[in-house]
Length: 460
Image 1 (cartoon, one colour):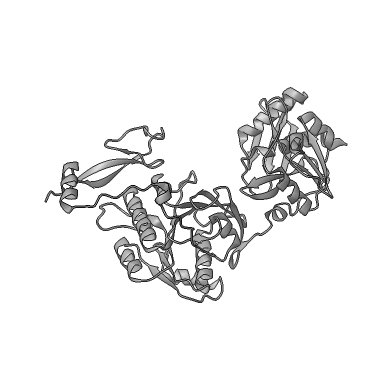
Image 2 (spheres, one colour):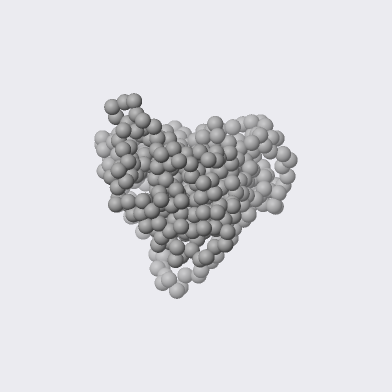
């Protein structure tokens, strides 16, 4: 029998592209200095072919679409409405879920709370920790209250031991914290390396599908905010969740960036307190709490996060510059988009923003990339420039083009309904959206075609 040869391969940390030699630029994603060396074992193709033939493997039969039996996903209630929303309705049995986020953001706390709810509901749950000792986990669990049900804990990093454990016990949910600490003895590289992470994820994927176990794996993130290791890791799993937020801010956002069993645009909002993570059922009310009234540069808008409308406060501060080049600062939205809107105002409305510093902020720490905030940013800038306050019961949304036109946005009716729920009496929106929004009681709808009409509307 031929002996496996140990060779070195180079893998891209961003996209997982393989190369037999080191390259300065990845041929796949074109990123620079992202290829790292990892030892692998290889067997020649001729040997693999002879082994396959001698083993007498049966050739699988290809099936037509009507020959495939359809099955609905069997889901479990996680005990958290916000987590169920992001997962698409609950935890799917046999799924592999990757949870990423900054250190200390609350990933382990969220999963430990989920284990608590699942165990109380009668599920058999195993929490495997490779970073914390069992005594450390107990200290954190004591702050969350009383635990009950069949919830067990294991401090282990050897994949062979973990695989034997999962195959010998009948479990419904398994937590792996974290995938970067797991290692397989047959792979000659350190834990956390690309080869070990890829092998560990492959083992977890096989166990999840073969044993019909829902497995959650925690992944470390890089300084850019993506999961550390090859990008292939995100392609292998069924669902990728990112836990976002600042450690100094109480609010956390759980966002799905990949989901084979639901929408990829849903978010869940949590608040961190002494006992753990608490669900925020009404994020709009939370984000608008403490908003100043009768102050220039403050405008309320509505952003859609999946199927959920969220009201936000957009703040602008415009002042005369003391430098040769005016300053531009943007927090919570695209910096280049803000510069574009400033240029539109200067060109179409004749406002000399080239002589002014401009600062834009989305209150509450939210990061929004939706173009429906354009009109609110424009109104906030004009309000601060003219020192003219906006009515606190006015909602503004719409996309702004380079010629100053106000373009349509999706789900306009749901945005208006959310405004009515929170007591807003006026809504400035794109005129083309008026036909989609049925007559609403208790709110005045003002349709505008361009930014000039929108500016006149706020002064009336």
